[in-house]
Image 1 (cartoon, rainbow, N blue to C red):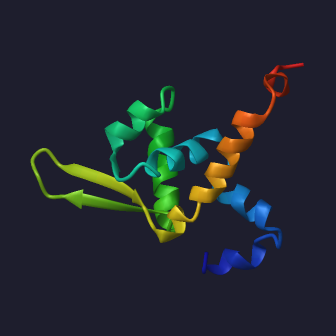
Image 2 (image 1 turned 120 degrees about the vertical axis):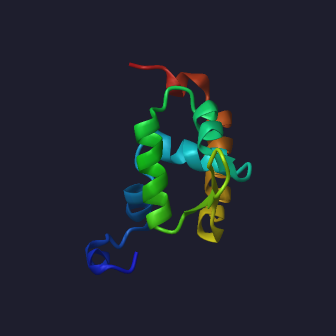
Length: 113
């Protein structure tokens, strides 16, 4: 971020990460885009339960912050494709580590109290 609010960013990298990738949908959208460029309908199909509104808002936010590119093709019907930028691709090892941890953790860690 290079706007005036960048002075308000926390020093902690984890806190910065959570500002952009807060909530489960944000991380799952990135997970879907790690498989390559996707159309909006493909992203929704890969994320059962996400609303069109939430997906649209997250994609716009990612685009604004340089994590995702949006390419609109002048076709009939119109086609829009979303793809991770180089910055977004840098999240690959982060999500890989999250996946490895989640897979290795005992099932009891995920049981509600």
